[in-house]
Image (tube, rainbow, N blue to C red; front, side, top):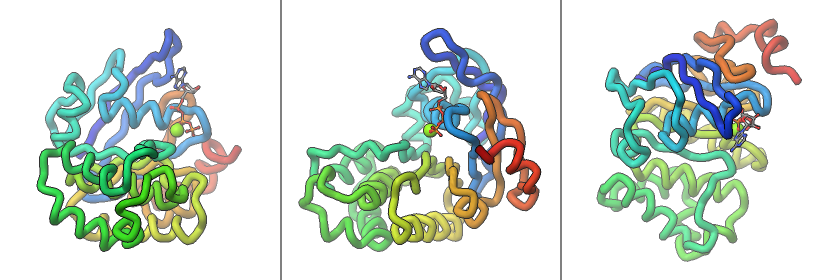
Length: 231
Ligand SMILES: Nc1ncnc2c1ncn2[C@@H]1O[C@H](COP(=O)(O)OP(=O)(O)OP(=O)(O)O)[C@@H](O)[C@H]1O
Ligand SMILES: [Mg+2]
């Protein structure tokens, strides 16, 4: 579905990604893991086109998207929920959601009902400013906004970071539901091992700017975890 081949990225003259290669198979959940600062967010930002690679290729359904603009990638079906959520704090929940619809040029009606089914709290808080919501509610808003672009590939950067356990469960349920619907592929950056193991079909682990292990989630052994994930 998505395939990265030897992606290299430099920021301000220092090389951050040193040849990242991995695949996200269709209609499944792939978890990208790794310790702090190994380049996970940089990888996601390169996939969405927010950062430019110095070499390598990115393919979406066999099509080379390496050189197309972020807006075009969104239209091609890449939805992104950034680390730290990045909702607009001074806009209302309704306005924040509306931005998702505009991004893909779709009618909001159907999509909105679906988002409200997944996250009922958002319907209740439509007139509230985004900045007034709790961290977990903001995360739900960010996921809802991404879903409104009707993505074929949904990318989530640490959706459980700094969020209360009951909301983590709700986000896990949502990812599971989207997976079961079988319409989209999901690429999830996640540090909570249990959360990742429960949700993912496959994994890729990064260390110092490259993927050092990958495969079906069943092959994520304690030895691999010890070597690349335990701090
Ligand atoms: N804008 C930037 N300017 C300079 N260095 C950067 C910039 N963004 C990231 N880096 C560096 O690139 C490396 C990878 O960062 P990145 O955010 O991709 O890691 P990460 O795996 O997502 O980490 P975390 O788990 O903490 O989110 C880090 O060493 C970081 O300091
Ligand atoms: Mg990160």
